[in-house]
Picture: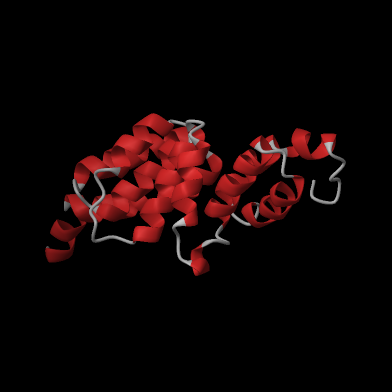
Length: 166
């Protein structure tokens, strides 16, 4: 009887749904967003579930809403991750300079992460810095969440004949 009652607990159900959210982020971002809302309501204040929700919002290009959720994350969590999420949201709102300022404050080990690379690439495209765009598109493409954003830079790269990056 104990196992059955455990499986019916909201947190356990939220954990089971959480595992599917990761998969749905790649295959059905809209469903992932809905599921992330469900789990965030089942376990309010859970940083892992809140972060999953923010991911879903960012992938769905709901940057303003994601930014409002990011400020709810506690200071106890991973500061690098929080900064990257905030920079991603700011970049999506075309606030590239703010995003870059956040990225530049990151520790050296975090500067080559795919999430950081896509922000650098998008910012560099605005400055027409072809080399930086190319280098960072390659790094960003390692993260499945950024493939669409990398592809958005293909016309820029094609116009500058950067075929090896495309």
